[in-house]
Image (cartoon, rainbow, N blue to C red):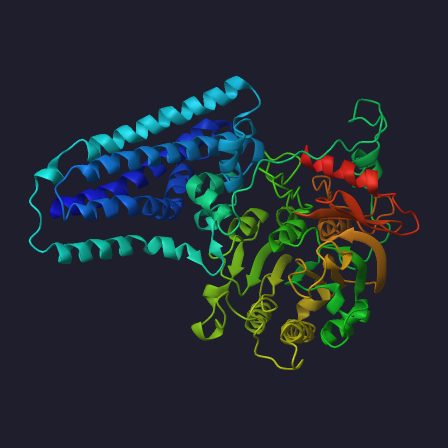
Length: 624
């Protein structure tokens, strides 16, 4: 039996070794992006990616383990014939995933997704390029690596007849149970990788350098993580030509029109001073409070339900309320990207192969936090979520956050939900830090609530018989208590508080393409604020970066999609997208298009239809 156990362990180790071997090859293939990295960083890529490699290897070892179990009962060679077929298919899979991952990375700036893997079979030109030679070269690379991997398996496992020459064990039932138990133990990393929030590639993230984090991610794990619960999408159907007749891309000396004008520094006023200064201190502390899933429809001060956010309603007259702010999508991760990086949600066609997080995906996205850190700010993030069970860690690290308080920093008694810790202990942890703070450096902190999400069970019972509303009321009450305590601290006078939302979740139920599905609050508070009132300018959460940086006298030129809400020189509109449609809302026209039906479902305002050509051109700009 010893040889069977050795074969089983060797199978697992070989899969791990191949995955580890792929990482330096990936970095060598894209050496221009990694040549500045030190040897220790290359080793860190291998070490930090090992957890995902172990999990992916465990998936692939399950079937060989079952075949080895069969040899406990029979000395026939059938198991080895089946094993050869399996390892040939596994070699093709690993090679295909590895080569496709290297091929899509330069175009997407991200790891392999299930969409790209599906496109490898249905439309290989979308992965390898439009040239026939590129496609042929891609498939040749797959075959070469597949042959290499299979040779390794053959020499180490399949070429020997030792198992057939070994006697069968005297107690096959006992050893079968032991073997099955060993397989269950092997699958432990698989179960650990699939928590309440699904599979998470961010377990491999370790650096503020996004490229190093992506190099550490196992491509097979990445593809499976994006496929989980979503299916493999077909290749993208390109959006029809959207530019007006005669409208051209920017050329030297040519006046820009359409979507290009929205990104022109001269028109956007991105270097201009804000039309009004609202701060009374040049370097305030910045606290961004992100209320999870909070819609404007539950904020009484914005015309919504008056019985839910009673604390926020009382705070609105004390601050500056932006009354027409919209989320960029219905996805919380997109919401954080908008707030931290000033990005609008990229094209969300149901059939999209790749995502375009920024106009130049080869460069790291600009970050509000990193920009402030360059000015001497400290940065920290607070939430009751499990950062290792969500896809937050890389996003937060690459954004520039230095310190983190999350689920693992709280006692087991505080972890009352599968997703983590309720809002009150999180706000209290932040208050405790502020009360004991000794640094004189300015800081930016972000605290994100989590209680207003399924199953909506919270330790609070003010709004009776309305489970969901009561959860939002709890987050609001926690915010109200926190602000009242913050006002008692000396930091209050030098702090600007931004209260907003990441997105509108599944509650309250409404049409996906209604404008209310994206309408969120954005309120500025704090002792650093010298002006109160209501701003009716249309914008999105992505505009926070440019607005704040302009108030601090800092350039926001790098934030292509972010506009200063307090500048008369900038164009003001809100753009959002979902897999089924997209919209552009401005003071004169609120337009929403149903992509599947290819028709306008909302066209309101005093200038109906005004945004249609602009919206289509804007989307074409994003997709190019």
